[in-house]
Amino acid sequence: MTEGALIYKKIDAGKTAGQMEEVTLIPKKAIDIKLEADVITPDSFAGKTAGEIGMLSVWQGPETYPLSDFFEVMGNAGSSAAETLIRIKGDAMRVKRIGECMSAGKIEIEGSAGMHVGTGMKGGEIIVYGDADSWAGMEMLGGLLHIKGNAGDHVGCAYRGKWHGMKGGRIVIEGSARHQLGGGMDGGEILVEGNVEGFCGIRQNGGLIVVKGDALRGVGAEMAGGTIVVGGKIQRFAPGFEFVSMENRVTSGDVELIGDFKKFTGDYAISKRAKGALYVSIDANPEL
Image (cartoon, rainbow, N blue to C red; front, side, top):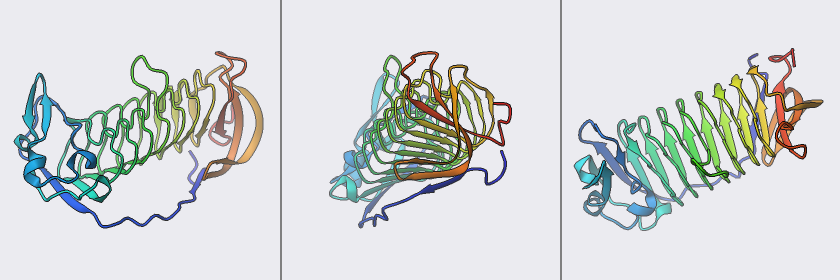
């Protein structure tokens, strides 16, 4: 990809965060069997003292344990989710479902996050300063999930056996992501600064996916709607797309992308009524 080939601009409303009370979680020990910790949300912590937060239950295998068995809990939560900041000071790659269905507030993970971080998220903000395991932002509805490192498979995806994935909100990945990013996506926005692997945007119905780097194969396979923009090279282009035009600007909601693109529509291999839009860098894909 040529440096600066794709310019991404987003118009922000400029929100000012209110005063937040901080709860700090510090891992006590290495975790062997992964934890199911959907209680780690501002919604669950709101109105509770550090002692009460420590008594919240998490699953490890077939048993439940208090959160305080695994984390030192410091600080009391705010009176509402919106007034609560949770800071995890350490790696949480073996802690699943952090921020699940949260509606407001903020979570900062000073390390990596386990599977399903931000699943079903409705609002608020999660910042992961390391990597995120698979299923990050699954079926997300609102809010911001910001991953500073890399992400695994199925970001913003629909769960197994379902057709509809992310419906709203925004996911930003500063590194790269793996397979099936945005699968079944109905709305919202995903931005990947690096590369993606196979089947990015598979079965996409709406929303916007922007990949600044390269894509392996199957981009937009079975998509019926929505927009995908790839600033790098697509190694194996899906056959069900038809060339429409040359473009130098893509707009979607409050996002503007500037570059030299070939616009395709599809995936006509699935439906002749498909309305998906795929924009591909001209410089990185001269053979298309």
